[in-house]
Length: 517
Image (cartoon, rainbow, N blue to C red; front, top):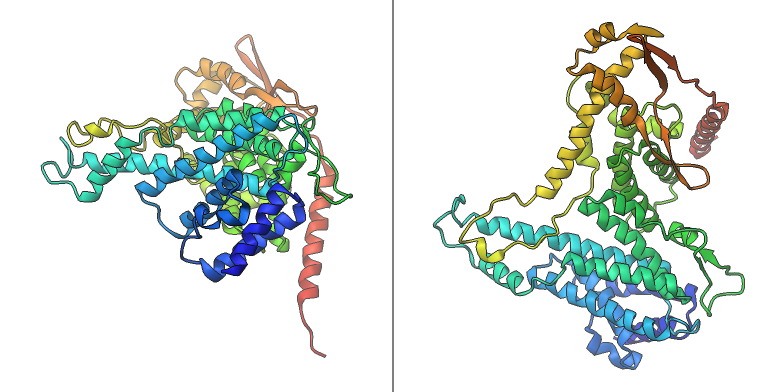
């Protein structure tokens, strides 16, 4: 159709020539969706070869166009093994082409390439989403095939054709979505972005850092997840593209990442999970509490109503509230999160937390709801699926992380019991406290409590230092435990701000009431 040809021509012009952000935003978020709903709601867009004349056969633009249209195809259909392998080819070709051109033009500020931050993030977000889906798919295929191998529930039966076809295709494409290749591209994009002064490559570098952080979290390397965000600082400044309006100012990487709602939430969620698993409870509460307070206000005011993907953001909000329920329960310091967020935690998880305090299980259910879908990056030996069976479950990575979390929480429950008794006394003998707590190796528990609550945290200047999250101070002298409750600082502004917020909500409700006189 003629509108499609015009769209491809105009989109190519905004990417390679004019570089006007407002025009590109209109094409990417407006025209593409309008044309999709009109012509391709349930079908694929034309191939890159079919539209190459409209962009002069530009290889970079055609690679970007292929990714955009393939992303749409994956969203309207259930990809099979061949589609998933083809997805790897799409992204590897795109990144190879981008990196090759970046090496040629890294020193030129006038490189003819510009992509919006939103578009750049969508590319990298989908890249990792497809990698995560492929890892889950191949472990599922392998687990399904082992049912027909030795010891399987269908041993001796002939596997269905689709099982054999999937095994054959995956065994022929073991390099597709290999974790080392995925990490290679992300690290290369980060490095190119840091070294370049071209906005497009800088955007790829910033959002590759966010995506790499998410990947490390899914792999269970929580220290690397936090470290991956190191480049996102105020010192990394991006100048506006040459087609920008005169009033557009330079922005640093923190501002750019913060301007893309999906990137901000993804970065915060995975950093929060990592801080929790690293026992950095204050940092976890800080990053999750801030964004949950912002999102709570946004949902309440209807600000997010028209944002694309708002359903997914709502689910992530619920997950982050669940994480905060765990954090605020094991880290009882006063004022960790905003009062409105504390209320949300109590509304959604108050019953579960009450059961935990009564000695029942509950942490595992909350964590299973809140945690990401951890992945197993190793490639199975497909040839052995039907001949040797399987020696491990396909959800090993997920179970390992849940087990690691529950092991830590079992220790925390003993310490919370110890804390509850110590808050009742200013001094108590070690022997009597031991009888009350009724824990084996009680002396070790008393000493371990301080160590467990001592953790790294970011101070106001952004530097990391060791601190404590305990709300009591105690020491042992002559077999007597001496306890001082930490002085609680009254924060009157929290009360007034909550009352102002409630007053505003009441006034809005009153104004929305129509009264006929």
